[in-house]
Length: 181
Image (cartoon, rainbow, N blue to C red; front, side, top):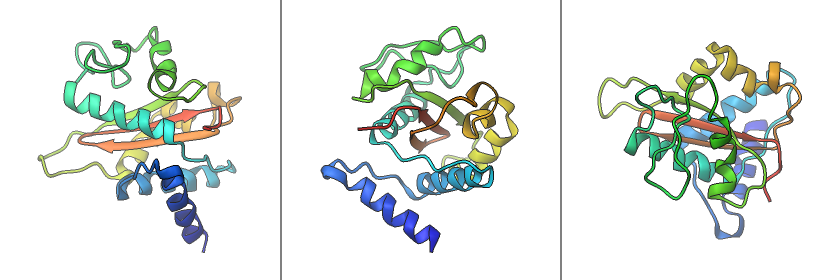
């Protein structure tokens, strides 16, 4: 019954004001897996956000089509080929503001955005990332897992919005601590 209710709410969310931004089956599965994982940790669900879905979708396509994650730049990097500020996000996090600002650059979302991203090594062009594989990867990473379940530096954040995209060999989840309007 709980899963049916979740799917009904998700369908309603996706059809608000004719601004539907459909999540594919794997993206829906990833959302559900993350919410189930958070629930097991005693954490509340996070509402889906049209704005953060837009940011996630835009970023996975930029990563797949323009590969800004090369030459010392990680998967939080953005190319110069879009209506956003480009940046090379390095392991020292000196470009964190570039990530935090993306929701405001691309949408009407007023808060910062915090991303976890995953790149899969696919065996063939027909392979796809599974939601389970992406979540398992993030759970194995101390820093990514902390974002998902509000631990460490993320303990004081209360996630009020989430956006999800899986495209090509990339998966991205964006978290926000401001509700989407």
